Length: 160
Length: 195
Image (tube, rainbow over all chains, first blue to last red):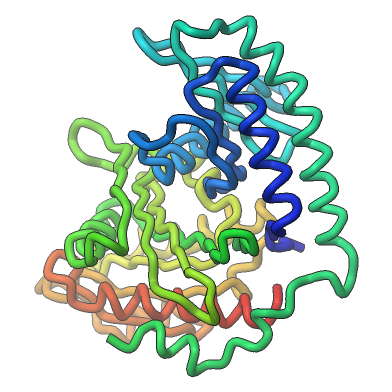
């Protein structure tokens, strides 16, 4: 009913590659892909100064709240959010109904350019996440690594 | 919905603290934050009103160590407890892997506790979860107050399912980590079952 989200090496590299490309082509400071529950999936660009975990959680909260507003108004979702700051701007969009794409950019870029590049990148990202969802639905492809976890392994985590 | 990243070898899980207004959900997280090694925690975020009532959520990322070569990360969230914030409360349950119900032990808060459990059941169901099946623990908080109901009574009313339950005094940390460990353990056991 609620399958785990699983990320494999192959798709991870594809997502990372797409984020790098978007960062370059949109002249962005950085680009993030986040799942709707607030887990960071991929980050690209100048992320050194940023608390990426908090950014992911707050973005997901923001999207969830906006989604709630959309429902109140009878909309399916608001697929794009834009926050304008004095120095940096935040462009947030939903990709394929599954994940959130965040672009942070400053005066070196523009909203028009970001929107244009996000559109293309979203289509490519949606394909990767569709493929992941397809893999997850196939029986027998679910990871088995965790079936081997023993109660002792779990207890050991808490043995302080 | 846990998130397993084979590329970075991480397991990410989401735990939500639920309960009536002023029962001590935020205090639980604040204690965990204060007592956790800086390497194992991220920044704690509180989206609160000017009077420090939770408006949207508190958020605390924690690392619990490795299991079979996978880093385990838990994201702890609280919901706003006040009745009229129900729309926000519902949003935070999205993708939850485990729930802690923090009950206020004071006799006069019993009705608020019962209402909150019922609200939890309804809101979980909207996301397709069943309170009787999800990893779930109960904490009886504020045990130090003179008007606290007996644990037997609290258990009879609030823990029909017989899940692990703990007595707590959140500001001093009594029962806080026991509660967290118990729910984290249940979440990992669920993961083991491959759900």
